Amino acid sequence: MELNLSERPTRSIRCIVKLGGAAITRKNELEEIHDENLEAVACQLRKAMMEGSAPSKVIGMDWSKRPGSSEIACDVDDLGDQASSEFSKFVVVHGAGSFGHFQASRSGVHKGGLEKPIVKAGFVATRISVTNLNLEIVRALAREGIPTIGMSPFSCGWTTSKRDVASADLATVAKTIDSGFVPVLHGDAVLDNILGCTILSGDVIIRHLADHLKPEYVVFLTDVYGVFDRPPSENDAVLLKEIAVGEDGSWKVVNPVLELTNKKVQTSVAAHDTTGGMETKIAEAAMIAKLGIDVYIVKAATPHSQRALNGELRESVPDDWCGTIIRFSE
Image 1 (cartoon, one colour):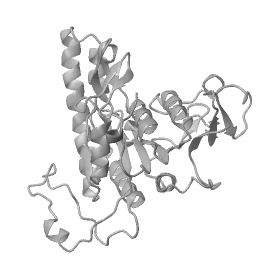
Image 2 (cartoon, helix red, strand yellow):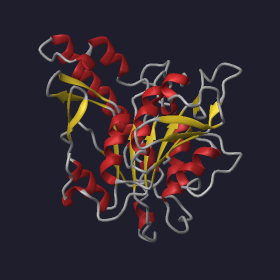
Image 3 (spheres, rainbow, N blue to C red):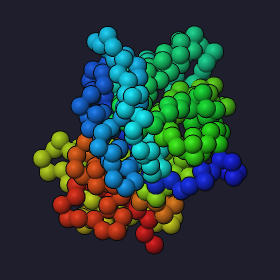
């Protein structure tokens, strides 16, 4: 897909961040946000995005009533004395976690078939669920003073063809960034040219954005410390600290050195996380790494995620950093 000049931001993108659904929601509780993690992630994002010294007071931008409150939190009076804050260019994409998956799987939206009443109803129900989550994430980031704008792929013209991205209104994303806002996209139910409809995952969105926006680095925030050679709940699970991706798309673990390291990761290492989606995440991350863009997979709301968001790992990786780097290697 060719990108015209109107679809490119005038300033380079520093980072694209994926907020994993399992990290920001409580997976086993239907449509339940993990408030503590989300608040911590929002704070870390603000710190990473601030250029120069951070203001002494965070001026929130969520001027709506919160559940359980009878008043609207509004800091308008404080804005008059506030110096303009400069944020480096970030894009945020989040997964669905405990939102949307029940509706999508129950109705079979991911398989297509809009002519079936159950699929059409499930399509509507899925979008209600994931857009509700998107709003809450936008509000959480806005409360940290981050000028976020929610952007649903369906409403922004994203479509697929057999689940591959067929069209996307990247001009709106670019204009949003150039206007000083932070776009917040999410996995969504979208129309598919062949299937009728399907689910467009946040990981696929990340790869498509990275291909066209060319960020300096990409960070996947998850609910585990990175990629392991087996389920991380097992006592002898090994954290894979670095995965190298070659020009031909082949990839292997280079740190630590494992047996069968000459084979591809997907065939020699059973990579998992608690969501069961880590293999897909690695595949999309490898596609990004082939572009020469480093990808960091790290546990959200930890000191390790803050360092990754700050871009501190681009020159050298400290021995005490816990996470997985996927990068291009000739």
